[in-house]
Amino acid sequence: MKAFFKKIHTESFRWYDEILIVLMLAAAMMIICGQIIGALVIAPFNQMIEKDSTGYWEMFSMYFGFIGTWVVFMIAFLIVKKDRPILKAFWTAPRGNNIKNMGIGFLIGCGLNIICAIAAILNRDISLQYDSFHLFKLLLLLVAVFIQSSAEELVCRGFIFQRLRRGYRNPLVAIIGNALLFTSMHLFNPGASVIPMMSVLVAGLLFSLMVYYMDSIWCAMAAHTAWNYTQNVILGLPNSGLVSPVSVFKLDAASAKSSFAYNVEFGLEGSILAIIVMTITGLAIIIIYRKKKLLPFNPWTEV
Image (cartoon, rainbow, N blue to C red):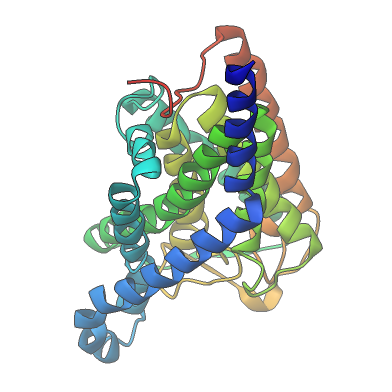
């Protein structure tokens, strides 16, 4: 009987300890600290930004500044003892964290974006023209975009997802809860409205399914990076409302129009088509990996 009440007390404590709004506020404070550190890290680039008329270094710095988020959360995981197990979820302890799944993630991110882009072109929503190709600059931007995209995965599919998995038995709480935070992080982006925010929510759910069913945050990081990079740096389209001044292709903004396949202000990911293709991909992940019965890595119980 004593053990029974002790168990109830422990579960009750965990429930109050893992309230979503509390976790979101904690994450928000650490993100702000990360932005401050990121600003200090990119400070040496300020002179280059001022002298660069192309806007390349400004774009690079914007993405690269998310290194501050990585720094703050890694320090927090090391200092806060109860969060320290989360570190294991970022390395090779989860069976799904491997090169193969990272490659699958890149293919999913690129593939979904290209499908949406082709549909928008065929529907005459957008017109793209070749601009330039500078391999070294593109590779540097790829690294910077990976830092930015993986930082968002670190916060949502790392910190929030794992803490909610610790506090609640039903995995839907973690899957949906972190997607809600992911959506809130984009509420103040240019062009944020109902359909774009629905699309961001579905993207958050898709990345969560990669973590839960594929046991791979690496896959989610790669897919997130590939989506942003393809849309913003390769195609030159708005990425969550933000337009890159440097890209392989350029958009004829004057002739662009919104439709089921494109959102003028938010980009491809603000469309109904994006919601559809991401939903289909998420269902495919559930069907394929549910059969494999791959249990997700639990950093709170596994050594």
